[in-house]
Image (cartoon, rainbow, N blue to C red):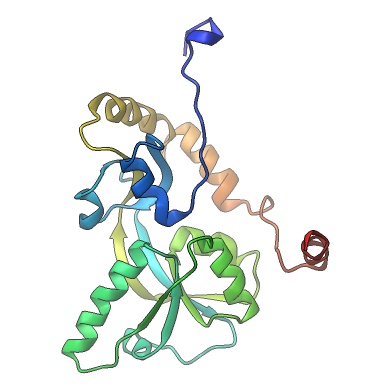
Length: 225
């Protein structure tokens, strides 16, 4: 900002990668910032540093196909198969729940980690189509996609983990970048003018989301095949 010569400006490169490669690729230096709403956990903080406004209180909620009505409480998940994002905090927190089930002598949840090429949104599509029965996701993601995919049901009463903070990841001992990102976060966090505008555009208004199961989208998919 304020630099006139194009050659003197910092150029930003975006490198798409699968979710399970975000932390390893950051540590290896393939990128400098994990630009994702990544849940801050103790195990992750041992590997990398985070920058976060801590203004977004995130809950991990259970989702099912709308035809399912068997799950009423957390204990009903005992012995059930849950299909979740690979290397996500959902896996970590479901394992914690399994420890609780073991103490109660209940069958463990069968945690199935999705193929590394699949995102949370892909799993929503699979749930909507009835390919998988249950998954876990951050509440803000689940709420916007539930407006587009009519067959997915958010079970709000079943919170796997609450009070999560999310943030962007950076390598440890990177104080200048952390200081710069903290300054940037103040301008875009929820509650700021720009932050509120972005949240309204992407998390309240779902016109930009397309249902991948419509005939038009399926025909396009078949053409590519």
